[in-house]
Length: 318
Picture 1: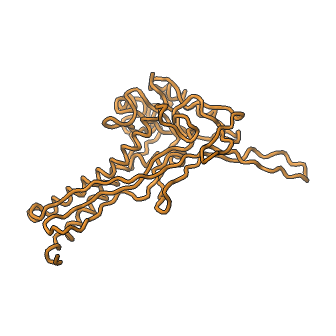
Picture 2: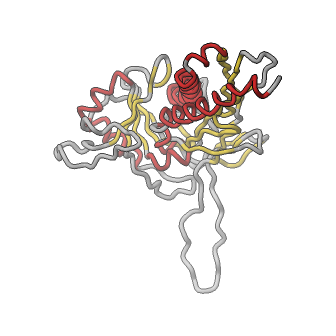
Picture 3: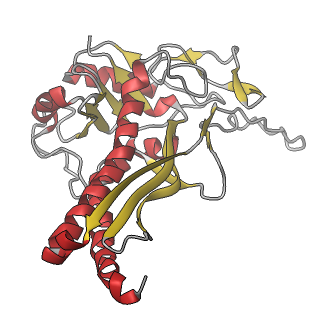
């Protein structure tokens, strides 16, 4: 196959690649505010450690040092999986409208790549209430009896420290000012695995698409979280949650059902919820024997998961 016969494919790739990356970045921007990203290109899995630490300092008598003993959270293992989608561009359609066709292909492949990751994250949140989907402590993400600490592991499965007690990150409240403040108060009483106060700021509201009008009413019309929005708290001073940022967690069949919602600490969420990439969504140009077909393959290898459940409080909305 001569270079002359395939020069049109070289020109195509320049437009496809640019449109692909722009579409992917735009789609993923909102959820990146509450989900971390890690690259694991040299490992088949990623170990997401739960929050842990040492207990408070002991009194010192001037001579004897007190040895510290770490208390650990629960470990979650994320194993990335491969995903792909291929699209062909014909020579004639490219010749007629090269820029339009290639940008359209690049944008659609970028959208599909971003939406694949996005959908897996929505399902992670949507399955929080599903007893069949469990985390490192063998309990659903939303549970009224999470174990506070782990006593270790056997065959890479974390075991609970039953002496440390339990905590709940699940309530059954309609979305309201009282419901949000109840969730925030619940989180203020959490302790770390080593028994110290769990310092968190439940600063972000997560809602189903059906609850977005209510979120606007409670938080303000401009409080929806986006790459550029970061509203202040001035406005309705009588409402303690006015100005709180919110994100819609739902689309199509995935995410929260119509009454479900949650509040979370956005900073801690980025430490405890992760998309582990062996390969971020990208577009590959495939060499074909047919000089009249230019094939592009969208490819990604990733997995999603959560570690510590204390960074979020869920509500069934019942």
